[in-house]
Length: 412
Image 1 (cartoon, rainbow, N blue to C red):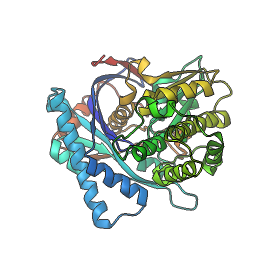
Image 2 (image 1 turned 135 degrees about the vertical axis):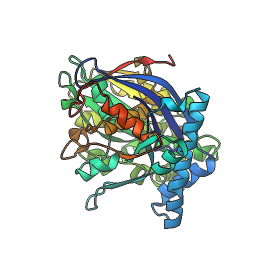
Image 3 (image 1 turned 60 degrees about the horizontal axis):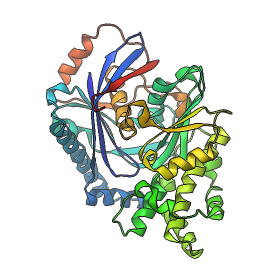
């Protein structure tokens, strides 16, 4: 089965797409995955600004929210059609689209009903492309009492659990999240949570200091030229979220533009330079991750494997290695699966599991009360074809996978 995973992350940079081919085996309850193509297309600036504005305001007029759901659906559909054209992929070769959509709000505050909102209407995607579309992956886990995140821990555990090594799979997107994989425990021993801000504070600083000309600190150049303010870092890290025990998740609702703006105001009051401020924002991400490991991780960590946009920031990576001297810190890229494609591949996997009727959450990572099938299926014109393919499956599917084997990338 060939599935295109699509995702727009917390940073709202653009739409990531990955075409994955899944084959059963080689053993029962295992699955092989090959990455056939991957791309990222930036959002139009007006759409990006609209999403960021709504996330920052925490309020939206009903007409604007309703319309934006369909506008984002059109954006995801257009990205898919551009992707298959650019990569010269026949649309008939695609079985399923798996779209995470765009998170607008993730509500996990104490005393409130656990809930979440990802938009980018799946019916629009299915109508424009003719491809059966799976979307809205978080809500089933939250209906089972979970936090609906981090869902990427499913991929982490199936791919990277090791008999000998304690591993941490750290994603640094807009928000940081980690999956800990204690040695010899497989996916059963995995646990995960959001560590706090990833690139979201750094990106805000880059936009602010360049008057919107730069969306991020390219290669960490601004941060590298400055000195972090240790007192300001310590003040930020007293935030209750960093002391809260997992399972826990967060997002722009907590560590968004308002949070970043408050830090910049303090930096300006202390007359920090642009470079020192950017170094401080970068160090906040590094130290929040390191503190999460110290407070909630295994006593020994052999490897820390980093994915997401932050893995391409050498200042972040060097900072993590310095903060975790007893662990080998490396980029996800070295494993053959590009770090930039990881989340899109994850949603391709989740979409594949949804149409096969298999659970794809790890309750010990999300806090859910049970394993559950993730995603809502919107039939496309090829829906009967998908059903026929499933009916011809060579062997019965187990309740859930125990191992995913990455067999390479066509783009290597």
